[in-house]
Image 1 (cartoon, rainbow, N blue to C red):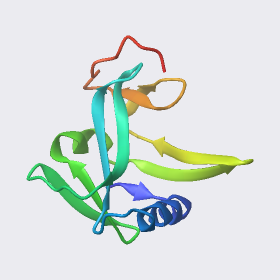
Image 2 (image 1 turned 90 degrees about the horizontal axis):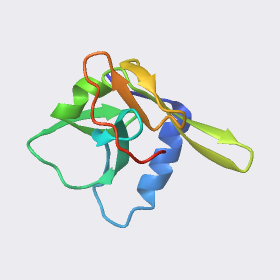
Image 3 (image 1 turned 180 degrees about the vertical axis):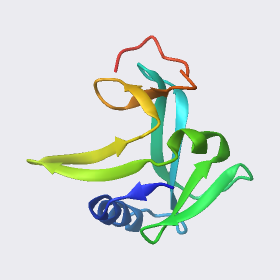
Image 4 (image 1 turned 120 degrees about the horizontal axis):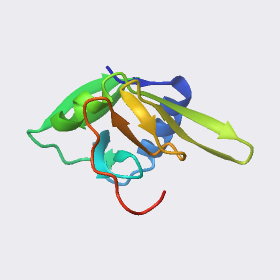
Length: 119
């Protein structure tokens, strides 16, 4: 199960409303890379594939590729305001190591493929 806080859901819904393409949804995933092995991917999409798992979280359609789901099970997404800026934060209970910037991780069973470029 993936959890999205009220603050993150509010911000995501605002962003979805600004999209010019109808029927957009939130797509979450991971890709090899980053300092630690896997990088998070979060964005809006309207293209569905047969490799997608669909769920409803905070009244939003959320899509995760089947291959990414095992790495994101239990994921918590929040949005934090900080002065004049703010941003999404991710807590992944599967991660045993994360990079300093928090955008990449590895799990106990999968190290991914770290990139040579720093965060």
